[in-house]
Length: 114
View 1 (cartoon, rainbow, N blue to C red):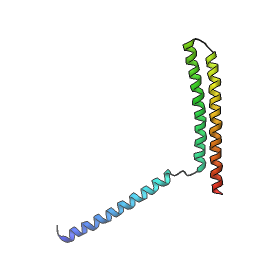
View 2: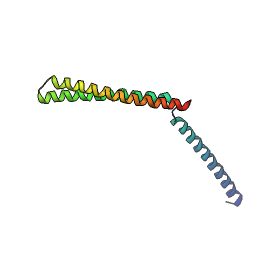
View 3: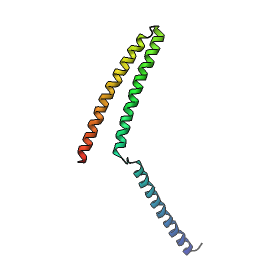
View 4: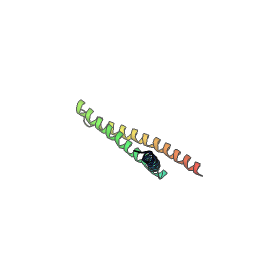
């Protein structure tokens, strides 16, 4: 391999490395753009959806616990009713607190925009 062929290979390699870096930068920018939330209301909606999920899980957890306690203590249906009321109350309390917090955060972000 003579000197001109080596130089030609070096320049080709250099060009390929530059193209590779450009492609990597382009892909990195595309990934960053796709990761960014396109709509701020989308994150708000997700927060409210999670509130509903939390409400359901708390309530169903208490219902399940009441049913198991009734089976264990043979006190049907009193512990089930007590747990249903307790679970609903706690879930509603958590829902109100979290919704209030999300509403305040939304108001603050709206004030910052204006």
